[in-house]
Image (cartoon, rainbow, N blue to C red; front, side, top):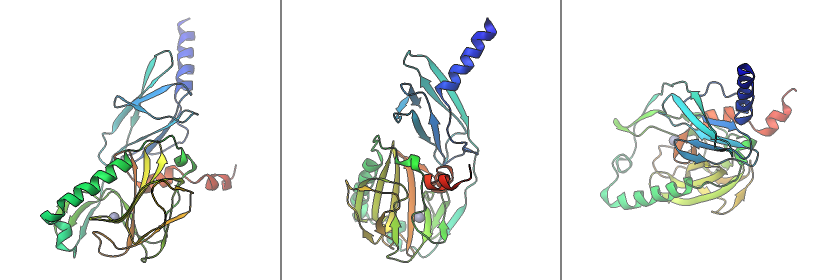
Length: 277
Ligand SMILES: [Zn+2]
């Protein structure tokens, strides 16, 4: 009898939560994709996590996230089960950038209000949590070009330590079209922020957003719905840069993720269709 109840419990757990993609290794900077029975609730750090109607959900882990993570699944009867996830730790590069104009290393007092307002707008745009599920169709690389900066690097500008780099930088000439890596809704399009210059944020649903920095031209406006692969902007050299490039970031709310890991773990649906069955 006891063995029987054990079997029932295993079967229930199996139904309650089952990750749909084998994301190996799950690490700092990853976007975990989980699945649970529709009707269940999911909590992470005591906060409810949004679910699709099919029970898919995502949880993002930041650059320095603790390696032992857990989330709670609650059934409609109120039964809670805790699931733990073990992350692998990462080593990050050190990146030294020389020749940055002094006003971008130590911004003048007169620019601090503007910087604060830029940050407020970015924070509000990334706080959007809509029921879109565009991220489930996967991500494509937004621009062609050599990678010149990666996620997580500790940075020194003109020898001074600054915040880590959270984007993936592709060198490309000014005017190169930037393609939306996944479908979504434009939530911010600003022609000239202090550090990031021309800046765009696209909401891919459930708190997952793409940000594009240093743009020379914006081709869509806030509120527009964009398709995967649609040109949304042009590469530029605006804000704190030493040359033309696209800086692409992916966030889960205010948690900064590694775009390279997200592209690896969320391949485009069309790529999956081409895969041998
Ligand atoms: Zn960058």
